[in-house]
Amino acid sequence: MNTPSLLILAGDGIGPEVMDEVKRIITWYGKKRDMEFDVTEDLVGGVAYDKHGTPLTDETMAKAQEVDAVLLGAVGGPAYDDLDFSVKPERGLLRLRKEMDLFSNLRPAKCFDALADFSSLKKEVVAGLDIMIVRELTSGVYFGEPRGIFDLPNGEREGINTQRYTTSEIRRVARSAFELARKRSNKVCSMEKANVMESGVLWREEVTWVHENEYPDVELSHMYADAGAMQLVRWPKQFDVIVTDNLFGDLLSDTAAMLTGSLGMLPSASLGVPMENGRPKAMYEPVHGSAPDITGQGKANPIACILSFAMALRYSFNDGAEADRLEAAVEKVLADGARTADLLGPEDGTPISTTEMGDAILAALDASL
Ligand code: NAD
Image (cartoon, rainbow, N blue to C red; front, side):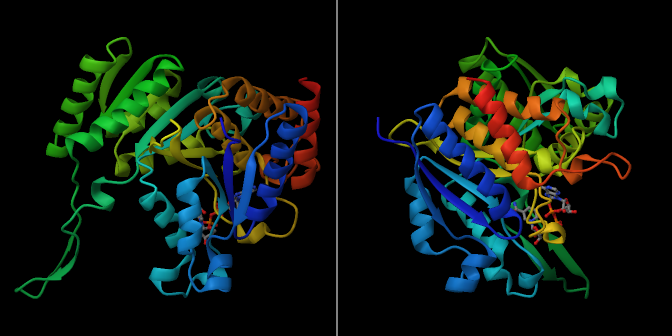
């Protein structure tokens, strides 16, 4: 098999700072685990606009289509707020997701024991939490036609968005959730609003079809998305994999994420259909943005970006053992008390820097050998 290829798009703000720590970890895997990656770097977002007048050039888009996985830092910042919508930094990110057809967005919500006190929920509700939200990412109400704001004959205006799903769009994201569940605790809960939406009825029927015909060994339950939101904050540990549409997934994954504490801890993966070599089209990125308020100060927590690379090891390179090793290294440094500023309250002692967090994780990786 060829050397696995990675395209690094560090982007704006703290993106390059957190990605620097990931690059050190990639180097560690080359040196210590004999896992070489063919790494290319390029620009996305505001930095790409500054150089090329567009947040993503066609050449960069073409590279993203060819590599085994894209690692993205963050895009955006106040310097670009007044740009035309068509060249805003976020358009670069949306173009990547759309043209790579990354329909399955994986958002884990995992509570590290050492941070259980950090959650806004009671410790016993979140300690040991490990759930995965699979959000459909390329269809639904954010993309459905017709859409727009229209003038009505009576002088009023009307805003329209259309929730629309097809059989194949639902089936493919359902399969991705069932596949994940088989590697975890073998349970999927599908969430929609079948009580009030026809698209929800279809969603439930198609998820059930995939279950009965292809994954009868996985436990499947259904829940209305509003009830699901309540259950997520009442007793989240009842869930393993949750699969849901684009809109509900947007809300539910952010809710679940906050159960675990800081934005600086949250990774994500967006996966598409398998390429010729069997690997899915894939992009891995922290959930957080470019954090202009702390850019250039060495304060950014690199863990979200590092855990995104762990997801790449697991889902693109099929190396669960090395992904476990990296996640365990993060768990160890947190248990030992290493904290960037975002993981500390005002009275909680001295934070370490982005680089020092990287150092600690590398030391824990060394210790794992
Ligand atoms: P943000 O995620 O950048 O920051 C929110 C808050 O969390 C800030 O106080 C920030 O300092 C803190 N924070 C975020 N990541 C952190 C980390 N790794 N370590 C420590 N603290 C961290 O969201 P925002 O402030 O709403 O947006 C800033 C810019 O980022 C905007 O231009 C926005 O459009 C963009 N954005 C980009 C993405 C992305 O690239 N995927 C996502 C969200 C926002």
